[in-house]
Every structure is written in structure tokens, then in C-alpha cells.
Length: 249
Image 1 (cartoon, rainbow, N blue to C red):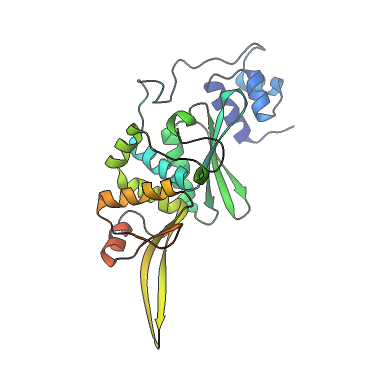
Image 2: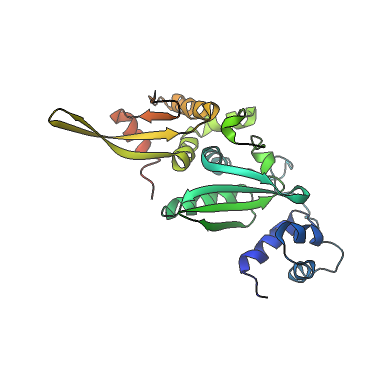
């Protein structure tokens, strides 16, 4: 049986996390003998790395802070972390399939944060951008069972410090995952008025609060449209957001 190259890359990434050949086989569904062959190992165990790439577990590993804050926004907007067997977790972020630039940006930032294999898999009209690691919950402690809007989502102090340094990147990640920039038209009598605005939509009160908190840091005026939606419509604020967000593509 011929396996896609992506399967080989996932196996090697999991081996780099310290999983045994048996653990990798259980996680991926690939036979142990195939896993061992790809790793060039004896039937005992895959080698443990000499260092851990997670910057929360190892002081020698540096965190790309800008990439992380962007990825945090993407995760809070439309991402999930699921725990697999043997302590491995999978970070999944979903994006509309037609936005090729955003897919590439998310994949690139994910790999900058943790240098493991990142895969892009089609899911109907969207794609799933995913990566396996033991350490995604270290970097995203908001991960937990159930939907994000059904449980508290609170940033830890170290995350808050990074958001204060890079509020633009957090807004970029949030808008590009769970927001939009579009032309809004109002009809009053015989006249039509059109203006550009940004919207952010999320069912979680906490995540909307994180979004509006970043807006406040930047002096961006926002309004609560309804229970789920935040609008940014003042001309000067839209022009400002256009300098680092813009329309999806």
C-alpha cells in the first residue's frame, strides 16, 4: 500500500514529540511495521528529542510572539483542540476554501509557533488546517471539553501581555476567522446609502469581550449589534483596520 507523503511527515512529527512506534500506530491507524520502517528504527521505540520545542515547557525554545497572537485569534474565532490517545492533541482551524491567502497564512503561522507538520484537508466548502503535538494545550490553555461558548474563556496573564503588545494581530486573526468586511446598504425612502464596515460574530461572551478589549487598546470604536455581533462602522476606524486586515482573499 502506498501512503501519501503527508502521512510520513505526520509520523515523523509524532516521533519528534517522543511517541513510540506503537503509540504512533495507535494514533494514526498506520501499522507499527510501516511506522518503524519510515523512522528507520528497530522494533523498540522511536527516539526522544534532545529538546522540546514548546516554549511553555522549555525556556530554551523561543516563542514567535507575533505569529502566536495571530494564531490565538484564529483559534478563538474558529478553532478547536482535541486530545488524541497517548497525550497527543490536534489543533484544527477551519477556513473557507476559497480564501487561499488566509489558508496559507494560517498554515505558516501555525508552523512558526510549533515546528511540526501542518496539513490542510478539504471539508466541503471549507478546509481544516491541522497539526498534531503534545504541546498545543500548553499554548492554548483555553482548550477543554465542549463548545467554547458553553464554558469560560479567559486569557492567562502571559497571553494578556502578548495581546497588549500585538492587538492588531489578535484582531486580524479574529476577523479572518469569525468576522468579515463588507459593504452595508441602507435604503431610506428613495435614497440608498452604502458604507463599508467590519463585523465580528461569536456566540461566546468572553471571546467577544476579548475582541472588544483589543479594539479598546487601539482606540477603535465598536457597537454591539445584537447578542452575537459586533460592528465597526466609523469611516476612520474602517480605514485604520484596512491597514492591517482588509477584505478576505
